[in-house]
Image (tube, rainbow, N blue to C red):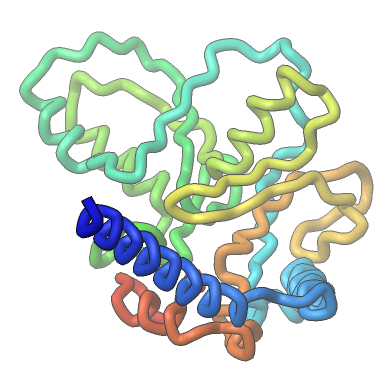
Length: 248
């Protein structure tokens, strides 16, 4: 009986020691209020840089105009979104050739997991998450998808819009709350969009009204702006990622 209590004490003590060791590591990773305010100021400065016409090319946070000028008001019909990280579009199109798909020139809106430009255009700036393919970066993915679908006679679909997943999130939530003007994704990656005054957006013409901005804030720190707070664990994880130095 004594031996049982002794073993229980040993393992309890061992667990407590492990917890204390983890706590010591975590303690040094805590950021003070001053540091958090400093990071907030850096991020805000990077946002302003991204919104500027002359400074955008060197900004890590690209602040991409989405050309969405208003949140939905409920009059829209038939919204549909597709967006699973492991989605294999090539395999889908390959399988489509073996099945009859009855579509009658239906319009489609494609949900994007990356940065895009005009409503019906989207140049892939960089790969994130688990995606990786040669010959796609820097090209219009809408045009590429359209050309691929046209090779299959059973597919009669016109792509009218390419929508970032943050924008889709914001617009979906707006149906429940008309004051929702921010969309945030926290998952495999992280990003956010929000409604910005046109007068603050130098990347597009016009000062009237507002437009939704896709921040692409996951790239914050790609230029080394967060190097002073990165830990050895951050660096080790980064080196093992598909895109070292990106999406830190």
